[in-house]
Each structure stands twice: as structure tokens, then as C-alpha cells.
Length: 166
Image 1: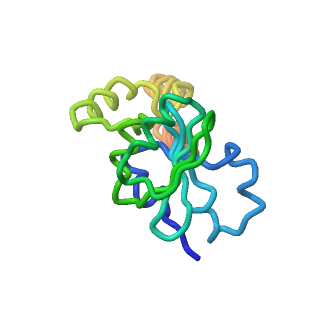
Image 2 (image 1 turned 30 degrees about the vertical axis):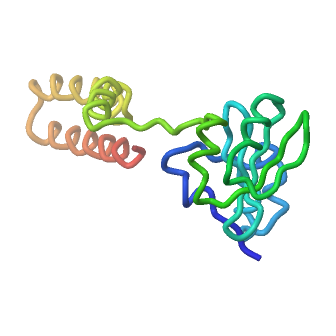
């Protein structure tokens, strides 16, 4: 029996996690990982039941009453802790009650603003390499052509090594 892959279906809008914070994930074959996924919410969680069915869980009585009152509920159990079963097509009604954690979605302007703000912290040529290059160029001014060429080639090797590290 197969189940809905929550990451594939809802992962762009909502935060998807694994049961037990992924502690048991390594014990399962990769093709069964969709069974371990949970769509976490402020008031509970949603997880696969099998096929096109999902289950929602909450440990709050008032929220449980609201979930049980939905017309899309196929099965419900529990008082203090409520579990309902519903078809995936009705997830919006369930999530309206459970309030899912959403993924951060940045506009193009926000992405550009963050890139500019963080540009100073990008990896690149280190300040030490740039300082060494400036120092060698200043000392090359008083040297003959042979010595300057030798120092320049050494500097180029150091600079290329720094570029490869990035």
C-alpha cells in the first residue's frame, strides 16, 4: 500500500518533518520514508494513513471538537486526544483549524535585499591573500624584471590556491 508523499505534495508551502524528529528514519528503507512524514501545525499534526487518506491529530479538546464537526471526516476517535481520518482533497479545511507552520517564502525584492546585506560575509579571496598581493606588488616596484617575474608567479600560485579553496 502506498501513501501520500507530504514533502512532494505540500513541502513548498508548509514545513514537513519526520515522526520522532527523524530519530527512527535511519531504521526504515528510503522508499518507506513518506510514511514517517508529518505536517506539523500549531495545534496538532497531519500524517499519512494510506492511499489518498490522511489523519490529523490534536491533544486539545476544543480543537478536537472542531475537527470532528467537519463534514469531510471519515472517522474520528478520542476525547482528550483526537484523531480524525479524511481525504487529501479536504486538507485545506483541516489545516484552517490546525494552523500549519508555513515555509518562509521570499519575494524577489527580499531575496535581492538579503543577498546585498550578506554579500560582505560570502566566502572569497581571504583578506590575507589580498594583503599579500598588495605587499608584493609594492615591493616589486623597486626590483629588476627577473625578480619581479619570480615574485609575481609565486603570488599567482598562492592566489589560485585560494580560489580553489572557495
